[in-house]
Amino acid sequence: MQKYEVLVRGSGCVGRSLALALGAQGLRVALLGSAEASLAQREDVRSYALNAASVRLLRELKVWDSLPLDAISPVYDIKVSGDQAGALLEFSAWQQGVAELAFIVDAGALEQQLATALRFSPHVKIVDAPVPADLTALCEGRDSQQRAELGVRFEAHAYGHRAIAARLSSNLPHQGVARQWFRSPDVLALLPIEKPSPGSSYGLVWSLPEQQALDLLAAPDAEFEAALNAASGGEAGILTLATGRSSWPLARAQAEPVQGPGWVLLGDAAHLVHPLAGQGLNLGLADVAALAAVLATKEAWRSVGDERLLRRFARARMAPNWAMGELTDGLLKVFASEAMPLRELRNKGLNALNSVPPLKRWLITRALGL
Image (cartoon, rainbow, N blue to C red; front, side, top):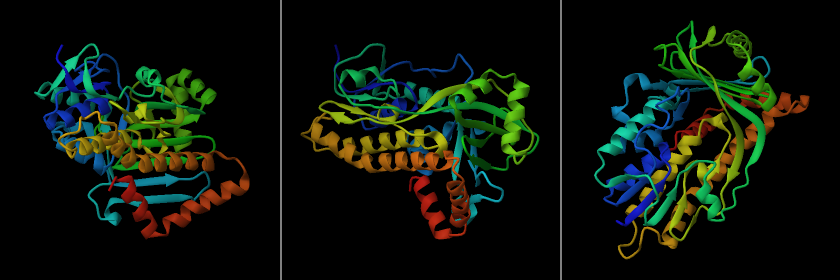
């Protein structure tokens, strides 16, 4: 049996991106999973918010510029509202001196383009069973079985919330504006996207307490739309469902350790954060970029599975992943509280932050991955 240098377990966006990145270095890579988009046979309503660093990686992998035009929507403005009238935090690409603040990408289209790129990667082999390799990269997601077999600690702290995703159509153009509402007890995000209605569609990510989310998932379309329009207050126009709804439970988790002799964890197999900042896939792709950089600069005498080498990757990702987990966890706890003093403070905090351009610039620079 042929031996590979790297076995990538997991064929989602993180796994496929890693296989492409390492194959581009000339490493012999085996990708365990399907070469085709895993969700091609069913409706995929997910939308990814990608920052500049993620776009740069995908461009280097020859994926970004091959995406269909209707799969990408630039975000020029972000409006974050609190749960009191007038509480608002705004970010503008023009004020920050950048072309766009982020891109909203159709999840299915991105997976399909990564699958297409893999078919043209001469150093990547798709396999249907594990093969010998110097390094095994676990990109299997939050429920990774191999991670458990390695004895890695992965305590997921459930938020008791679920995220609801769907595609929406509006009677008003989105104009590249992403909108978010931080309230007690829910967080609602509308992400501008071009499918199914160019210029007037949104990707919905709505985080709600478990039972409330389940009730809304089971509700008729008209009842769901009424609740959604009441929550958004008409700021994005009259919203109607353009697809079905999907849902998943929300939790925070951090694997410990994320590497060992001959293995490493990336993406959701290594860490989970609340989606309120839209940084989940960005963290995973940053893991890919960091591991690729470490392996590209390794000493010639080291194996790609050398534990000391992999510790460099772990050190590089420790602080960014921890910081994003703390940020999203802290924001959720602050805005989930129904205590009136804290409610007053958090809404005044949004307005105060909105009036300090240097601090806003610092925040958006880190969100962009720069």
